[in-house]
Length: 433
Ligand code: EPZ
Image (cartoon, rainbow, N blue to C red; front, side, top):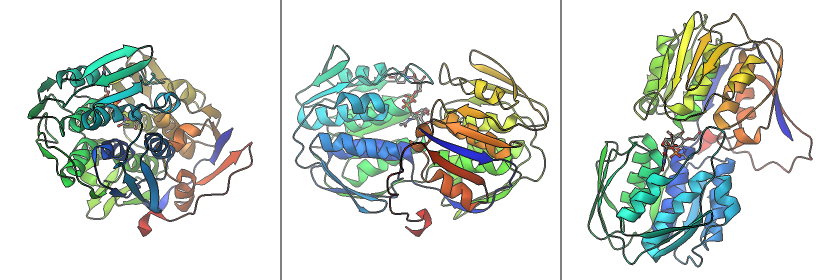
């Protein structure tokens, strides 16, 4: 088992480069299935979710190769297989989103239903309802979804909730449909906008991305092309919160401050100094953070993925913070791990009341999901003594080179493994590309 050990109390100082956005890259890689010619993607993060999606695309017969440490060639011109493997979809929910592109381009797809995870049931009913509205016959056989269609036909789709994944998935299905599709109550996340811009670069006709109403005029095929993925606002937000937690001063290079507005505004409310520039964001704090209230909402509200890292900071804030999680039904399981570090949090259903304490204390804790792991890393960086975080494979899903990046900022952190460590992938500093 892999684990991380942190000796807390070191203020983070210096510069860290943010990698490409996991949640944009995964949607864009699924969308690349639509292209009849090769696609080259730049600024890919080297994280396990990307490798899982690569494996998924290869199983469909797509050629997928890194042609540069963070540039990926995807050639879906000769896809030969229209069934997605069970183990890959259940491992990573985002791979379900190959269904729409396969049925849009080839008229058929058979994909396992993604499972729930530690933060919630994660249903895909909006996805299935939308595919049916586009004319696909969608049947469930066991835990597989089979979707069939002649050419999909444009329609109006109203999403009960502005689901990021459903918006992305249905947008990719609609770009090859006959006629016009309108997605009402669409998600506005930057990763939705990035996918739309990628599809437009391949010849798709999309308007309204970044608003609650997206209009897609279907085209007959998508050509190949090149595209650069946006920076990861969630990784950047994690380092901003870690800088505040350690009372440090960190420049997050390549971060897009506009994508981070909800998090940066909340950090400023907590007393953190934030300076946004052309090439990134500078974050510093030299006193105890103030308590603030957090309510997670769809973009442009406070992102649910930053709820856990932010709560770790609020554990040592001066005062009482109320954290409301409106997006997922159970995204507080990590609170019991923070309790082991001395946090004073009362959590019931979707609300946590965080009574700030002077300091946290190191302990051995478990990462229960990706962002819970990030929260525990932040807690360990600010705690007195040593913290060991187990099950770090969760963290590897979304944070490239976390230990190396933290070490470059002065953190005392090491990664330990019970198994022999495979030869490290060639280390190429993110900022060099
Ligand atoms: C995306 O997940 C992100 N993942 C999540 O990030 C993020 O937390 C989430 O959006 C919300 O911003 C990727 O992009 C790969 P949703 P997604 O559909 O698309 C309900 C991370 O840490 N819902 O916006 O699956 C759902 O249960 C991950 O990087 C339905 O009810 O999220 C949830 O309550 C975690 N039916 C709400 O909508 C559906 O068909 C929002 O989910 C779809 C969703």
